[in-house]
Length: 149
Length: 170
Image 1 (tube, each protein chain N blue to C red):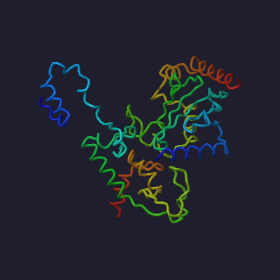
Image 2: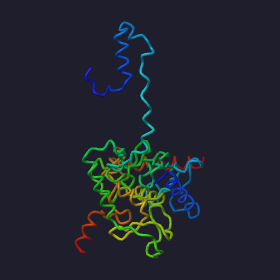
Image 3: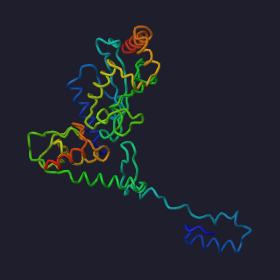
Image 4: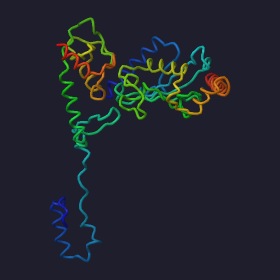
């Protein structure tokens, strides 16, 4: 007794049965509880994060410290300007997916002025906060742009 | 990056390499139905001990490519300080950022999502020409490279070159 997790009604029925026929308790198969419902189905709805580039963890298994760090990172990424590709000739290709930008693509501008598709660069920035083209740490670059403005 | 995107990116590179083959290596798929497993034939760089060799290696891409790096394994026997005896290649650009158990690699030397089969092979060819003995994957080979370059090291490399030539003509 004293197990707080035993709240299902089937347990109560078992308790009743136990008192009625305690001598057959271990041998009667119909007293076995049904297996717990399959849990896998809920998994895809839990977002997955990378606490280190090679570590993939569902949001439900993050430590408080990791949650704070990930929240900060998401906040920083969302502060980076985005735009709609306007046909500018300076940036023609997203070097992550190797496709040319098309009019209307959502792009993100890093402080070093390198431009990528938002969905291509955001996934990378969650793993490593550096520009893939010039390897400049994005947080350091953000600080300098704030200071010079 | 979804699975479809990584497959698209790899197919694009394969088509590009077929159209404009690179100097120093040729690339194709191990199995035409699996875009994630590549076979490359690396030509031993000129003016190195590996000159004249044709080394076969396999590249295994994860579904998260290009956010995560592929693994590279030499199938041909090759004696080199940065290649394990089982063929696994240990170079920093194939290590994920933050994945630095030894603490000596700069983030800039590690994996970036702009690396392609071509840039990876360029790094590998430059590694063949210029081993990094600070982080040997094959300690015996690194020791010979440092202490007995013209003796035992040269002999073992030449043996792997000859063997790779014989296998290439099979």
